[in-house]
Image (tube, rainbow, N blue to C red; front, side, top):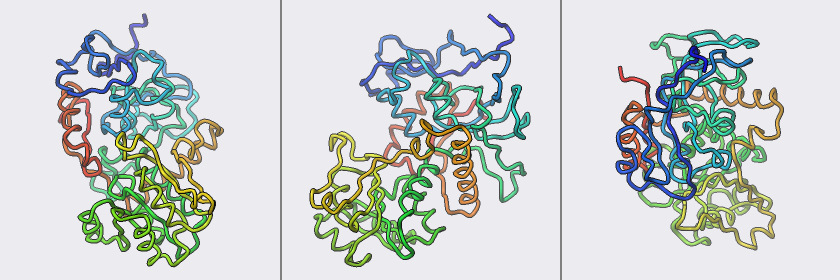
Length: 393
């Protein structure tokens, strides 16, 4: 054992057992250790300390993480085991996003990264999924190409990005940007984009992006009170999807003209997918990004045969595919991520992207309480984020 190794004292252990959900986190988490009686447990283990090598790997930097949001993806992993890349592991450290400071720089790092620099590491693919080393720990070694420096300005500067915002700079804004660019690629000036689930964080980001690009977006909500809310927020076109497919299509075509919308982004699934499909022009594109309908709809989407005959293109869209994580070359992936990062930064500065405020800050010792609060605000994830920090100031 190398005594010079860096210890990670706040590593979250995740004991994998597919298909069993945590019902009551207070029962699952006793103090801060793994309770072996339960098939799925997440917590701190006083006898388990992750060891980082004394020498930072070639081409990597060691980041001391300071702030991490608890994201939907983190809760998905806790509740269901999440991703196939993680299911073969007995234990791993979860956490899809975070922000921190460069602690040490390894050899062969060719960029302009420096010690003590505030950075946003992209952790989801290379660290979490490939290595089982997510953000819910103090230190993490990150490949140089996955590290993005934050603006080096004072906190008083208009260009300053607070930790609680920078820690949310990947999953939702990059998804919104990728979806938007994919959907509008074939939309002519003056064309229309349909957007379901506009109240989600991704949906709100898409609305903000569309304002910056002067694209006509029709926000599709499921309740009349949501229609009032978005109208008050300044969204010009809002339609409620609680009517029949025929009535809904008629409402949409009053705005778009008889041809219908050019593309749609669907974050709901089930019947909503079919209603959106009926409102698209022939050969229109329908991108499905998530299924908020959940187990009530058996995780399915619907599309009518008549719309398939019109060559409506129904596509499952993922950020992983957009960034070309599985098939792209390293330089190509870095280029795409850099464009997404820069665009996110600019849209945030111009106030087109509004990030959820943090509801409450927890330390790792308070993880059980943090997860309980997540359960309470589950339907309001777009309004607030729960943050994990190393120490409270």
